[in-house]
Image 1 (cartoon, rainbow, N blue to C red):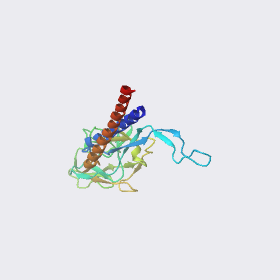
Image 2: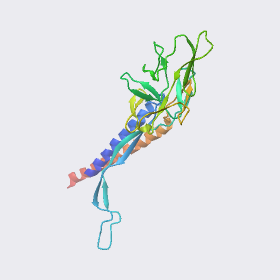
Image 3: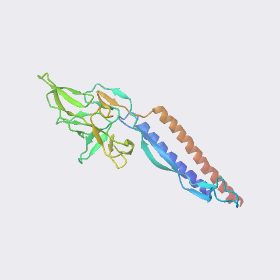
Image 4: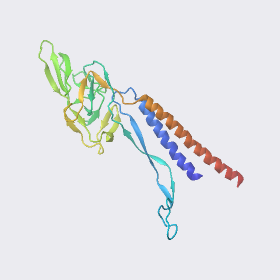
Length: 261
């Protein structure tokens, strides 16, 4: 009975983490550019009491042996980088990557972070920044006399100046991609950092060589499916209940022994 208690204990921990993952997904259902998480589980070591294939006699072998599992553990969580639906906002500084690619953001420490959140603004110096005031990389500076800002699908930023009918090019937005986006480190604030698992960032021009186009006046919504997460929540709840019943059953058996033996 004691092994059953420990095995069910690992099951309760695993389902608790699964519920935390579901709750985080649901909490970010309206977060721009958010990518949902999926927990990954693996079974623990096995106690091999009778080795499969061992001789049971001189002329016969054990077909399956006796292997006792010790439970489950969380191997990791995986970010699902499917593209969310695009929401039109008609705001000139709202941008979405329609396909593969990340915007580059310069952090205060000088390092580069990556994001799918294209909610940009202009600070007091005319620099295009994200919601936390971190500048877009390569840096784009909008002149004070700018009248209309246009971003093409391949990332070329142009403005028209009051009194000048000819558009003025301000710069080129570059996006980057990774061979394994799921290996990026999520740091909060809709930002990701490069890791050894993600591989080095590969910069490119939007719309070329497999990179997604930039859609001005649109934002990428979260890829969380509410109905799917609610079904997962019900499944996790039932799994948690079943593991707790194992704890109750094992405790009842131990109680019977202590009272009757």
